[in-house]
Length: 79
Image (cartoon, rainbow, N blue to C red; front, side, top):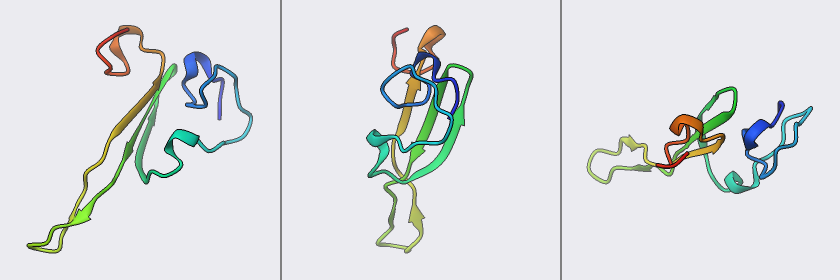
């Protein structure tokens, strides 16, 4: 929830939210870390699996970013 400037809430628009909402693009993902800036947000997801050799959990996943890409904040290679 928050102001939603520059799409920072991940809802696909720039509208503010008074209460938390599910981000539909992440509905089937397992978020393990979230970081929110003033105009952008990042989510790390985990698709981890147990290693067949030692049975330890090996995290692997994706980094999702949304909001303002000003100054390269999103890491997409553009602004």
